[in-house]
Amino acid sequence: MQDWSLQLNLEIVTVNGLTLWGNCHLIPRGPLREPLNALRRADVVVIHQADMVSEQNLKDIGLILREINKYVPVFVTQMNPSYFFDKGNANSRKSLGDLSNTIVLCVSSIGSVNAFAKGMEKIGAFYVDRLEFSDHHKFQAKLKLVFCLFFDLRFLSYAICLVLNDMNAQDIEMIKRRLIELEDRFSSKPVVIVTEKDYDRDPGIFKHLDPFEVLALCSELKIIPSRGCTEDSFKKLLKEVCT
Image (cartoon, rainbow, N blue to C red; front, side):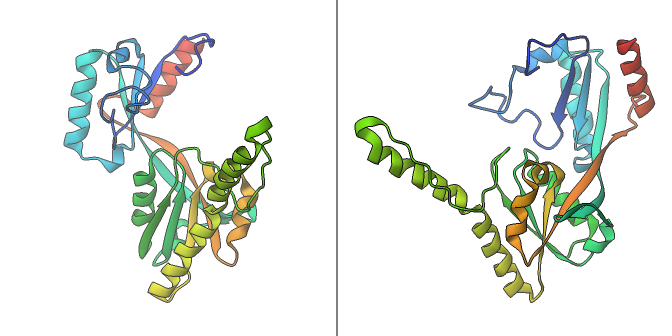
């Protein structure tokens, strides 16, 4: 729960199958928002990115979860890539097969970058490179001057703000440099792939990458049947709670 003001009638906890609970420490020392024993409150646990881990690892994760919450139903899920759309037209559709034998640069600011890049490899890209920014990073294309005037510290404040904005302004140039390096290396123009989440933050920002093609990947969540936990049983559980 990230908002305790909401009325709680069902608690679903998602565990990333690739990273699990990291070093088991809470933010900021680790990735957890609550200690692991908080799983005792969970009504449902979802192991995500299950297609990226082995069957044995899934079993081991399930055993750990049931040591904490013996009877909790455990669902396993994966993200299924559906199609791409062009940066200039969100209504366009390009099939996954269009990326076959292509040089790809995955640009992302999400929490699960490994799964994103591996997904492109599964699609059949010839070579997959990646450029990662911090989670929820907002890309910037131009230098924005920010004037911060604070009494006698005005010049120092101005300098600090200018440097920070200059660092953010280098995002697009950094991506362009990597694209040019890839084009020189493979003698083929690479394609930039971003997640739908990153695209939606600022759809217009990626036009600054012209003339390189930029495609946004659309995916859908799929529940993988596992030990009686299926998509139908998940829907039934939600229906029981909501009625």
